[in-house]
Each structure stands twice: as structure tokens, then as C-alpha cells.
Length: 330
Image 1 (cartoon, rainbow, N blue to C red):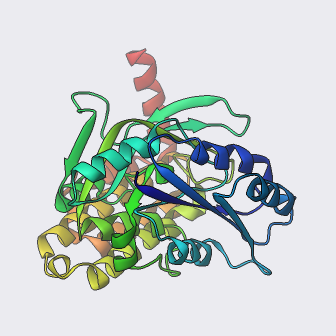
Image 2: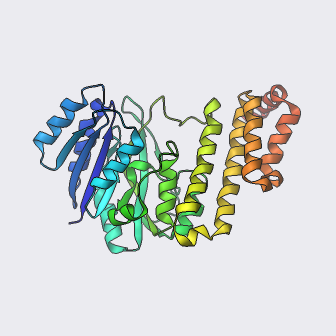
Image 3: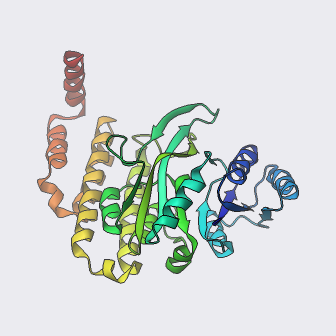
């Protein structure tokens, strides 16, 4: 059996930790080893983590004497890993039965695949499942699919296509490409998947692989005020680092770089439209300037024209027109 090393970073999630660890240990068809990294949690994580480690020799518990932050904790987990496959699983998420076995089988049958990902279920803090995230959509998608690196990068574009708790990485490749960048506290995952894809193929499993818990602090709402522009700037920085430090063939791929920056520009315009709809005109203008900065050609796109029309009409009249349109459509 292939060994899968599961690193579980934990900060103040003692109440979720047992379910998370047990979801990894109960996976069939793989040899699982778990490392709990307690980043100096102020809750009872030490008691829960130590108890889990004492009950099962496959579990190791470590506690930081001071809070190091999630990037340093992730990279500590990467250094520890030594099995065939590797997974970073946040303590507030958990795996579904068969997830690791499905990923391991796909990667065993496709040595050119560097990592796999799949669908995820979204759970509210009280545990109720509200929706399923299907990154590639659910229609006409086979149960398993292998994408080339460039295919994956174009599908991903300026967004994080991968539900993080479903991402199983080949450990040797993870160590080859290195750890997470401290300059990317919010877009480190997106950059990592693109960096891995610049070196290898990507496997997709069209099944629910894990459960991701949504919190009020997650940036999961369609519109999140003043944090929109910093988030977009983080994505731009992720692309800059990717093309500077990715695989050699990626550094020379100006066509792909242009595609990704254009997609970021279009995503920025979409967010500018949301800001405008929320009567945050100043933020909409700032995001619009950012879109033009990263990709001047977005000036000729439909999202740009639509935003300019909104700005010409003004937020008050645009809202009124939208309301009338919704009533007529209804």
C-alpha cells in the first residue's frame, strides 16, 4: 500500500480535531500517518491532540511554543513528510470515506500525475451540508480525468480551482518544488497548485472527497468590501512569483502568462461590478484601475463596457433598473 502522510495544522480548532484525525485514520487501501501541528492554540488542543496520539501510534502530536502562523506551519509539515503521498488537511475539515484510496489509485496508474483533487462538500459551523463544490462541473465529466499541466492552469485561471482538503500531492514532487511562500498568506494554495502543475500532470476525481467547513470569517461571500482589492493584488503577486520561480518551460510561456493576467483583469472587473452594486463606488473605481493595470486589453471586454454603463447611469438608477428587470423576468 502507498503511504499517505497527512499533516493537520490546528489553531483553536480542538472541537473539530478528533473528527478530522479519525477521518484520515479510517481511510481504506492506504497506509496513513498523521502529524498534528498545534500552532500554540489557546484552547484545549493540547489535551485533544495528546489523547489522539496516545490512542493510535500512527498519530504524532507537536505543539509550537509560540504562534508561527499558517505558512510556517505548512512548511514544517512538508519537511516532516516522507511517504509516497502528502496531504495538508486543516483541522476544521475532514475527509470522506475512500478519498485517499481513490487518489492513490489514480496516481499509481498515472506516474506523470503530480497531484489529484476532487469535489468537496460545504458545511456550515453547525455541521449542516449546504452545497457541493464541483470544480469542473458535474455534466459530461468522467469519474476520473487526467489533465496536462497547461490544461489545468488554463482551467484554473485567476481563481483557486482546487478545494484544498481534496489535494493529494506526490511527496517527492512537493519537496522538489518547495514550500509555501510567506509573501502569499491568502493565495498560497492557488500558487502552489499552479506551481505543481508547471512540473507535472493533474488528476481529477469526480466524487466528493472531503468536507470543507465554512466560517463567518471565510472570504466566501460574493462581496467582501475593502478586502477585495488586497485579495486581487495577492493573486497578481502569486502569478509574479509563479513565473519567476516555476518550471523552466513556464518562465518562457508568455502566452500563458498573458492568458492568466487577462483572466485576472476580467475577474477584477466582475468584483468591481459587485462593489458598484453594493453602492461602494470608490472601491469599484479602484478595482477597475487595478484591472487595467494588470491587463490593459480588458478595456475592450464586455465586463468593462458593462461596468462603464453602470457608472454612467449611476448606482441609484442602475439599482432601480435592475429591480424592474427582475420583476419583469419574474
